[in-house]
Amino acid sequence: MLRFGPAGYPQGSKNPKDGLDKTKALGLDALEVEFVRGARISEDKALEVGRMAKDRDIRLSCHAPYFISFNSENQETRDKSINWVMDTVRAAHNMGAYLIVIHAASYGKSPGTATQSVIDGLSRCKDIMDDEGIDDVILGIETMGKKGQWGTLKEIEEVMDSVQGTHPVLDVAHVHARDIGWLRTEDDMRSLTEDFFKLSGDIAHFHISCIRYGDKGEISHLPLEAKDPDLQLLANVLRDTKQDCTFICESPLQEKDAVVFRDMF
Image 1 (cartoon, rainbow, N blue to C red):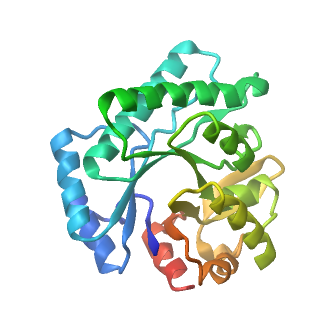
Image 2 (image 1 turned 90 degrees about the vertical axis):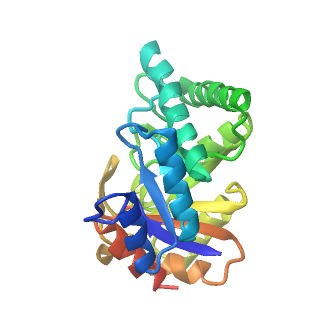
């Protein structure tokens, strides 16, 4: 099954119910709840959002705060990163969201410690999840678009080898930007998705958009009309896939471009 939806409630949404109704009216069936500034939601409210999403057959995921930095030189920041992940995990669990998306780390002054720092941080999160009996939320680690950020598929695979319940989230535009415009052909897209599907688990979680980039990688996300990369190539490759996929649109025209991408299939 292929599902499509926006990163965040559609523009102009008055509240979660209105946002879910707008998502459904567009013929979309996924939505990523954006907790990028903190997962501030009560248990009752999260349960209510989950019920509304289930009633509308909308698959939920959640994006954890941008502040997370498991490789920070500051121990307080590393400790807070555990809390930021766990706040998002608990919200996702109450909502029935199957996955949270994490920007795990930057290389900073200690690139050689980054992977182990992410392993250590997410291992602590997984231990807390086990203690609290939360076993229905995947820790999704996003591929990152700037060369100074930790988060290639290979690095994420190393974490998966050590921390159960982790999987990559493939941000196609980030990969394109990090490799300075790599994804130019269907063969490029096929190679990337084949590598991703080996690691993705039951549901492959994608972020899609176009992107502006420079020598250091990502600069900013762009609408799909920019065609850099051309996501029609991705749709062509995946049109007949048997892999269950969620495509979350992070372009500046999130819900509109989610529909545009869906219609490419």
